[in-house]
Length: 113
Ligand code: 5GP
Ligand code: ZN
Image 1 (tube, rainbow, N blue to C red):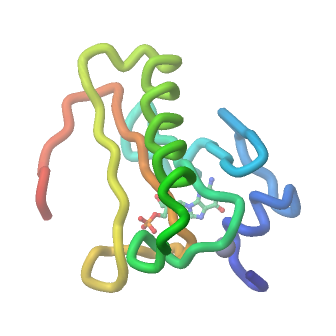
Image 2: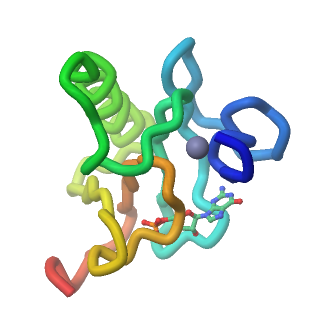
């Protein structure tokens, strides 16, 4: 989608520190990490957020979650980690392209803000 920074990252038009890529998914380090490990997983196709995911995108969403798990393994997050996605204004979503955060490498607080 024009003007979407994560679409630009997916297209290679903006740089990112890539962790994983396939034909449908890209994972890269968050620019402003809140923990020693803070990665983002995005679909290459533009979806505004999980609230806008459609029937038929189950496989894509499932692959994103399994990719999150694999990244956590690669990053050796044996003690645990968090996968989260913010939705809309009240959810604190600042980038309107679906992304799962994978956060770990330290003890996390504040499960619910
Ligand atoms: P949200 O607030 O929408 O849940 O998360 C957006 C995340 O994207 C934030 O954690 C923010 O640090 C990250 N972010 C914003 N712009 C960029 C960017 O240009 N590159 C990367 N790698 N991360 C970004
Ligand atoms: Zn986008």
